[in-house]
Image 1 (cartoon, helix red, strand yellow):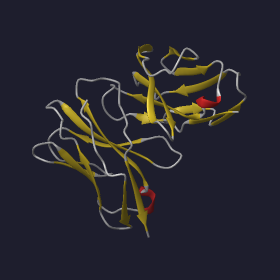
Image 2 (cartoon, rainbow over the protein chains, first blue to last red):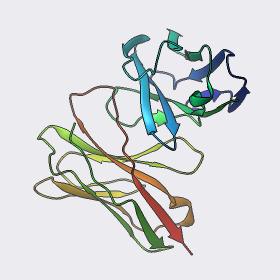
Image 3 (cartoon, rainbow over the protein chains, first blue to last red):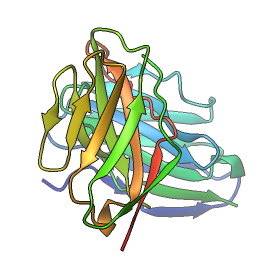
Length: 113
Length: 111
């Protein structure tokens, strides 16, 4: 298994532009999570899905952020419009049962200039 | 979920055992102890979890005190590649989904 696959690995964009981050979870995992990591705030859970349905989006910072999971093998996190304070590493993770052994992707490093 | 307290940083010599402590004095009966680590520029990696009994796998051992108020993650023979941030997390066994990371312990393994 290739693990959780995220793309792109790095993204540099200008303020005001739309950014879309992508994630392919491990096949058969029913839970998918989006985390954001910054030096100031550490790892923060943004949103998670169970069986493609968003369960808890209380960590999404504001309306500029949206996440979708159209099917069991793909999820996107979109920021529109992007701002410099959105610069961070965004991780996607998946889990078989939502309890044990989360597997994280390698992350997308987003820089908004 | 119970709060955890970990030292900010620790050092360990290569080849020696690394013992990383975690305090979770307010843990309740159905809460598990999880350990993850994050090597620089990578996503967090699951290491081990336990409820009451000590646990061992190919990566590490987890020792939980009898009163469950603290635990220790043991890397029996630390290597330079074990240099990472180690996170101790406590979460209810009936809580699905949300896994909250604290600041963790920066473990530096030196030659």
